[in-house]
Image 1 (cartoon, helix red, strand yellow):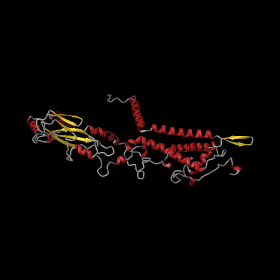
Image 2 (image 1 turned 90 degrees about the vertical axis):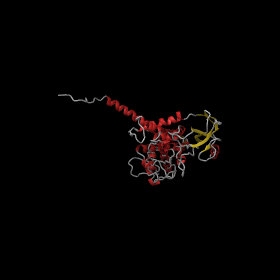
Image 3 (image 1 turned 90 degrees about the horizontal axis):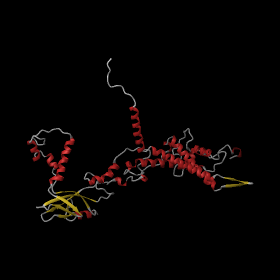
Image 4 (image 1 turned 180 degrees about the horizontal axis):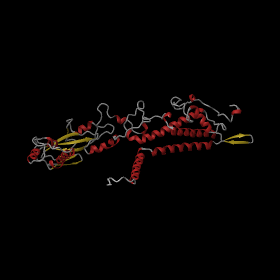
Amino acid sequence: MAFANFFTTISQTATNADYQGIFATSASTVSLSSNLSSLSAEGADIVKWVRYRMGEPKVVCELENLQIFSAFEEANIEYSAIINKSFATNWLSNLYGLNRDFSTQNLTDKLPYQTLDYLNRLAAPYGSEANQGGYQNQRKAYTTFDSNTQSKDLLSDFTDNESGSSVNDYITTISAGNIAVRNVYHSPPTSIYRYYDPYSSANVMAAEFQAESYSMESLFYMMPVYGDLLRAGQLETSDYIRRSGYSYGIVGSKLTVYPLPLKSVKVYIDYTTEMDPFNPDFKNNTIGDPSITGISSIHNIPTTDINYENVNAGGKRWIRQYALGICMETLGRVRRKFSSIPIPNNEITLDGDALVQEGMEKQLELKEELNATLDKVNNVEMMRGDAELAVAIGDQYATIPFPAPFMSMA
């Protein structure tokens, strides 16, 4: 640089094509725009803008263009990381189990639908305990009680209905240590038979007493669906509570029937084994459950750095300011190596420490600002805000007088 131009021209200039990042980015991959009217982070403009902000042309900024490019790239990466982290924490429950193949999936800049898959996955064990759904298969086993036997061992005396071997032999083949008994009964449930068979004694008697029934010669009254459901539930409850004259108790591995049977009784049990959480019983027979190897945390959500050209003006301002903060920190570390420069009869003190501190504080302030903004617009806060807005609108309408709902006579 000629001495005549020392205080009027910046030390280094650049073109858009000169841009070169560290993490395999270039002017083309960052999608720098050539027609932006503001001082955006383009290859040429970012260099000029940073150097002007660092004091040039009055004071030389001892940074190479590549260092400024690197700072811009890091700022873009940091911005993307914060945005993607907010996206992940906000929608993680809807992303669990999805395909995490980075070569085929990219969830950046996408808005998912709300689903209940995560809730159903957590609730499934409770459904299994209540015999209402879940991911565990129930198996059936049986044994026979007689007048000489009141107690049986659940593992050695009961025969697995499907395999034909003892329950103990079966659970050994699947490396299970125990079973959980879900139901105990000594004859097949009869509620469906009684409910639908038109010739059952209950329905025929109901027809004789002119009560509603489903015998072939009775009228079919139209009833709401819940009436049928309540009736079926009542019959099923009757089977569980009043139909059998026996009861049972389980202590350890022994099932005891009360009272002692007077004749041979074949008793069935429905049971489940310990389920491998990574190999559920209810899954696709061909490919298993792909969600097991799907997204499991925020670290394997397939997101990428946000394309700079897809960032709005506020986001670009954040990236530029963060890049400036990095440049201040970098320049400060360079100048800190030489805290003072001797000159004739004096020395020049450099501001390295101050630049490092100011640059780091600027980066921290920008991060806190962006995180605070994202916290205000997460799903929960937005729903809470909408609810408060609805209440406020209702309160305002409550003070507005409405016309009288009747006609007055002239």
